[in-house]
Amino acid sequence: MICLNITGHEVEKLEDPFGLLSGERYEFFLELEVDEEDELFSEKGIGLKCIYVRDGNQEKITSYHFFEHGTEKVLDFELEDDEEELVLTYCKKYAVEEVEEGIE
Image 1 (cartoon, rainbow, N blue to C red):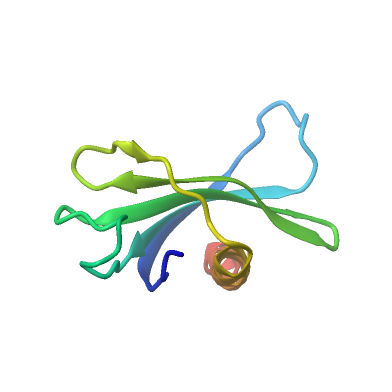
Image 2 (cartoon, helix red, strand yellow):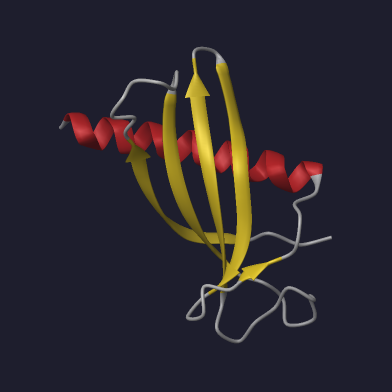
C-alpha cells in the first residue's frame, strides 16, 4: 500500500477542439511525499499524473500514472481503492477552484 500525502499540484483544463468528448477534463500533476521506507520512494521525488473528468453528475479519474521527477520515468504502481478516492476528492476540490479562478 502506498501512503499518499499530496503536497501540491498543477492543473490544466483540457480543451476538446472538435467537441467529440462530453464533459470537462482536467490534467493534474500531483506532488507526492513518499516515506523513505516505501518501495515507491525516489530521492528525486514522485508525482502522480491523472486525468479527472466531470460529466454531468459523474466525476471520475479516467487514467493515472506515477512518475519520477527529473527523469519523468513512468513507475508501475497502482492506487488502492481508498487512495484513488483520496485523489478523486482532491481533484474535485481543485478543479472547481481552477474554474472559479478562470472566471475572475
